[in-house]
Image (cartoon, rainbow, N blue to C red):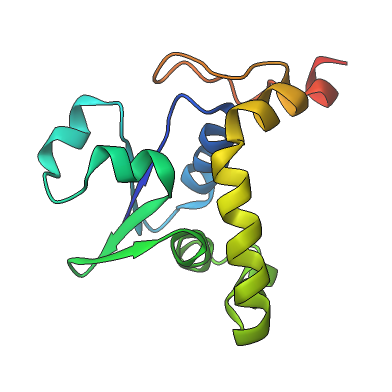
Length: 133
């Protein structure tokens, strides 16, 4: 089982986790909001680091960033194109783009959804500008 530690106050992050949860018919994922009570049972994950880059754990091995994203989408058999982001040449570019996204996720959330942050567990997945129209 893959455990994904995500920022539940980020509307874009929460939207992706909600999509993963919806596709996880075989219960291969454990999605943990780093701001929730459930996170306290994972003392091996540094909360400050987890706010900087997406963390995951599979077989007690910690994975980071797009490795987590790729593993999560592979676990639910969706978005096969995400695996291309782990190819050697693509990895370099994709990792830098991901780190930029992670640093700017609240600003990007505001631009794309009209909300920069939300209370833990309160992100409405129907917050995009297209959904409001």
